[in-house]
Length: 342
Ligand code: FNR
Image 1 (cartoon, rainbow, N blue to C red):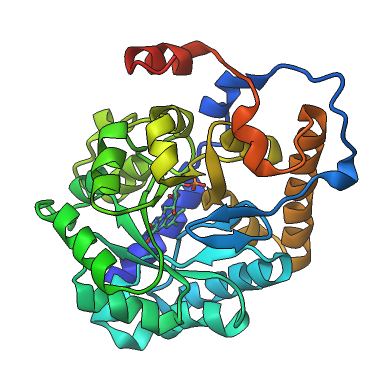
Image 2 (cartoon, rainbow, N blue to C red):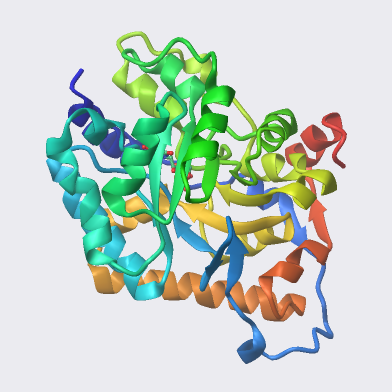
């Protein structure tokens, strides 16, 4: 299977398999604060993540690049990132590291947004040299390293050997001079994994939970022998956020991605300890079907929703979200209890 064909398959199937209905964020609710003692205009959207001061908690998360026809998608996403000052990650650059002729499909992101925060992306199988080259390719401000074991296992042409990942992540961290973010791709992250990453010197983690783009479904659609029993694998985004206890928060900053549908989900994630919130599938659908102006209006809508929730909760800044009481119900509460996190 051609790598560039796989990129196009991922986009096509991610658009087709997206889970837009209920997800773990519906198990999270707030108690009302009838005396918030704050005005809407006092709410601030800026946040700190991975040593970046970000004007918005929204991050356009890793999706694409690697086939010529993905250039347009990355270009549109980069314009949105530039116009609304959102940090943006590109999709895995392993394709361009192996075939430099497709590098332009990633570099368009830097070209459109010369001063923005751009994150490079490689898999944990990358060597130190590949990680450095991925950062250089984009003059990236940070590097995401993705973990996607279940996706690889379900991918007919995927990796089968996952040994040595932690050591390689550590080597990359020691030799690349931009902040490193280790991320899942929609299967969530357990506290044991976060602990290992932190013990290896990683201080920025994107829990990448279940609830939005489902790569088990995406790969099953591409496979002649689909393993549909794995389509519920992993932890949801909210469950993953609940995995991070006070000790983890003291040592790492956490980002939440996976099924974020609107500004209220963003505020829920923030109140569960996320410093930034990634969106992938929802933005792919948006740029696929809408003009840049319409996409910008949607992002403005999300920012407004975040500020409405912040005002109602009496939150002047997102960093105070962690002190806001949240109610966790349903399956999420049950599963968190089993993990000792109720
Ligand atoms: C992704 N994602 C992803 N992540 C990564 O680290 N490297 C990659 O190359 C890709 N590729 C990719 C392609 C497409 C089409 C999609 C939709 C997503 C995963 C992404 O960053 C995110 O973790 C998940 O999609 C979950 O977030 P959403 O989609 O539920 O918001």
